[in-house]
Structures are given as structure tokens and as C-alpha cells.
Amino acid sequence: MNIINSRLKRKFIPENLEIKEWSDLAPFFLDLEQRKLSNKKELEIWLENRSELDSILEEEMAWRYIKSTCDTTNKEYSNSFEYFVSKIEPEISKKSNILDKKLANSEFFDKLDDSFLILKRGLKNKIELFREENVPLFAELQKEEQEYGAIAAKMTIEYKGETLTLHKAANFLKNTNRNVRKEVYTLINERRFKDKEALNNLLSKLIEKRNKVAKNAGFNNYRDYMHRALDRFDYSVNDVIKFQDTIQKTVTPIIDELHKKRKNKLGYDKLKPYDLEVDIDLKLPLKPFNKANELADKSIEVFSKLKPIYGDFIYTMKELGYLDLDAREGKAPGGFNYPLYESNVPFIFTNATGNLRDLETMMHEGGHAIHSFLSSKIKLVDFKNLPSEVAELASMSMELISMDYWNVFFKSEEELKRAKLSQLSGVISVLPWVATVDKFQHWLYLNPNHTNQERETEWTKIFEQFNSSIIDWNSYEKYKANAWQKQLHIFEVPFYYIEYAISQLGAIAIWRNYKQNPEKALQQYEDALKLGYSVTIPEIYKTAGIEFNFSESYIKELMDFVILEIEKLA
Image 1 (tube, helix red, strand yellow):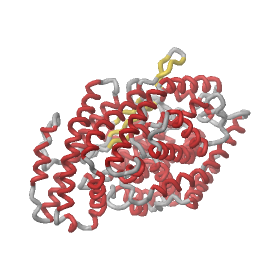
Image 2 (cartoon, rainbow, N blue to C red):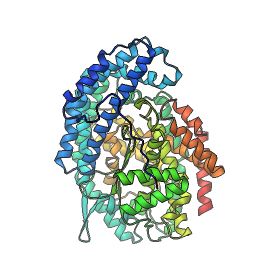
Image 3 (cartoon, rainbow, N blue to C red):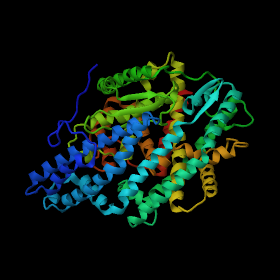
Image 4 (cartoon, rainbow, N blue to C red):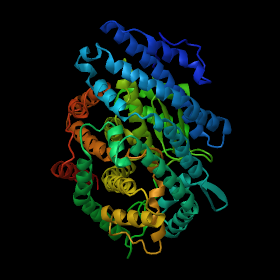
């Protein structure tokens, strides 16, 4: 296999620069601030130099974050991250605003061609939103948001003499013995419940500061502020609300039918929340791999079969040590692909324990990684900073188009079929969950002075609107009322969630194209990813051969397609 080397060569910043203090960076910002821009060519060089500086800074921040999440117990890592966000980043933010205004006020900026449309639009938005009084608030928020990972990383249970992370313990929810599932489900949720107040208090603290950020920027609430801050130019808040309602109308009834089928097939009088992960035919859980290295190697093989260069991308990450896949105590929860804009090799973080969900996660994050590699040749970092509607399209599509090659992980056609059925059921069930979390966040920030009890009540109300009425929550109501606490996005990246539903629709459409014409669909997928964020989201979706559309008729059309594919496998 080949190692892909696409690291940027520095032209403006010395290769040996060490970033310890703001003073290490100040001269480069001063150079950009004071430099004369006498013609279009000088402006273009200025943009490239600034992009190089931004790439270095974003990667510096990335590594400090990555290390602190890989080991939340390491004080050196957490202190390094906190120092950057509290002491260095506020200075960067203030100076960046000065540079933004310098760029916007240049007489040559408007003369840049249409390929700079996205940059111009985003720059104008960023300048309008900037408030110096928010700079220290952002620093405080970034530090406090990390508290969620630190709290969650300490959550373990004792089961049969073994200490298990919650992620590892969740494997027992696939156990064919119902009593085992019930026992472990209770242990997991009781452990979560111990930190109920700590997480409630953390969210309340975050809401208060986020609300202040919004007010400082002239917004009535943080929801409307974030809609602007996330550069959602291609759809409105009302579009999102309508999308939530459409999911409830079109997808929740499908979930009910799937759960009715599950209940009847399992032969239970009542379907309990600990019955949702077990195989519907009570077969032993799928075990696609044992160790993290096996997950990495088999994933490389899957991606190589799809397209050899994709395998080279993930192989490069493995060889460079840019994969941290195994679950362990002290490691933050969740999974992510972190783009590194100077190395141009991303980093994948997961908590794998050997189950099917870990395979799906690796395909998802691998899709993000392939996106990073394919867009690595884009000159300006502004065009690599992707909106989530585009980033998640790449990852969710890869989950589906890679499925035919999952035989690498399974010994039989029957196991592969089970894996595909699970994946396709997840494609449907993710939509109501995303709508639940998103609608809850709308409520949180439209009612920032709510009590913890009101929070539980409202979450339960919204949860019941979108989720299956077939599940019997009797005796487990308190777990349902606090289920939102397991969603790290609410704490760490507020309002970054509805994009998963938008992207899931796009991914289904790409997969449908792939089943009809694999070569053409894959080329369209690549063409879209190579654009980065250099054109609008609808244009990127069009390049991918699909619609940027979340209307009721379109959702129904795509759900019907998925149901048909499930029926073919069943």
C-alpha cells in the first residue's frame, strides 16, 4: 500500500516555529495587518499567507484537543488545551477580526472572481457577528464544554467482577439472555443517573453563557444566533422546524411498525428499552473484529476494495499513528474524524469494543477522512472548513456504499445480511432521534431560564412525539427523562445535529444512485467532496447527483426505497 504525503509546505511561517505563548504568533498577525495590498496579486498572496497561518493554528489547537480526549486523566494535556483556548485563542480571535475587516475593506476584494463567493459571504457574516465582549466567553465555553468528556470518561460499571466502560458494557444489550440485558441496562443507566445533577448543572452553566453570547451579538436567543453562526444560508429556522414535523409525520410511524415486528418476533408481551439491540431472531451478537488493530486492517481492506486510493488514505493514517480506535478507561466518549489542515492527514478517534456499531462508526469516520484527503489540494483553508451538511454527507454515504464489502468482516453471507439489515434499520431510526435532540435544543435556548424539572418534562414530551409508542418504559421513566444527557453534541457542539438528518437523506440518495450505477455514483461522490466548501450546499449536492431536499414527498420516497431494500434482505 502507498503512504499519501500531502503535507503543506510553509512559505510564510518558519518550519521550526513553536507555539508556547501569544507572543510567538503576534509578529505574523502584525505582518498581515500592516502589509499593503496594492493590487489583486498582492491580495491573493496575502490570502495564501493567512490561510497558511490559519492551517498551522487550527492544527495546533486540534492536537491539543485530540490528546486531551485520548487521555482525560493527563493533566499536562488538559492544561495545554485549556491554556490555548483561554490565553492564546482570545488574542487570535481579536486579531483575526482586524484581518477580516482589512480583507473586507480592500478595494480589490470585490474584484475577486465568483470562486470566492463562499468566502465573501462567510466573511461578511463573521464580521457582523463578532463582538469583543464575546471573546472571553468563547474561551470559557470551550474550557467548560470539555467537562462533559471528563465526566463521561469516568463512567464505568462493575459486572461479573470486571470494570467496564459504558461503551463496552453496552455490548451486553445484544445478549440473547433477557435477564442479562435487563441487569446491564439498569447498571448502565444507574451509573449515568449518578451524574445527572452534575450534567444538569453543566448544561445550565453553558446555556447561561451561550445566551449571553447571543444577546451581546444582538440576537433574541442563542438558537437564532447559532443558525447564523453556522452559516446556514441555504435554509431557514422555519425550514428546520418544518423538517422536524415532517420526520414525525413520515418516519415515526415506520419506527412503530419496525418495533411491532420486533416485539412479535421476539414473542414478548411488552417490548422494553433493553430489548432494542438484541438480534430479532435471538442469534448471537455479530462480532466483526476483536482488537482495534484488526478493525483498522479490515477497514483498510474494505476501502481498498471500494477504491484502492481510499485504502491508501486509511493506511497512511495507520502508519502515521493517526488512529486511536480502542475503548479504555479515561478516554472521552464518542468518535470523530478531526481534519488537520497542515498535515492534510486527518485523525480518527473512536471507542471500539468489537461490535457492529464500531464497524459502522469506522466506515462513517473513514468517509470523513476520505473527504479530508480528497479536498486536501484546495488552496485556502476557508474552503476546507466544511458545513456539517456536506461533511456528514460524505461520512453517511460511505456507511451505505461500503456495505457490499463488509464480507471482509464476516464469515458468512448470513452474517453479512444481518449486518446490512442492522445498518438500514439504523438509517431510519436515526432520523427521529436527530429530530428529538434538535427540537429539544430549540426549546432549551428559547426558554433559557427553565428549571431542571421543566427540562426533564419537556424532553420527555418531545421524546414521546418522535419515538416509538410500542416501547414500554414502565419502571424506567427516570432513564427516559434524562436520556438527552448521553448526547455529547448538546454539551460540546450545540445545534450541530439536524445536519445528520439532512445528510442521511442525501446519503440514501447517493446509495440509491450507487446501486444503479456504481462507477458513476462514486465519481459524482468524489467530485462533490473535492469541492470542499467552495460552492453552495445545493450545488455540492447537485454535483453528487442528488437533491438538497428535505420535503415530505422526498423523505417518503427515500424511506420507501430503504424499506424495499430491507424487505429484499429479510
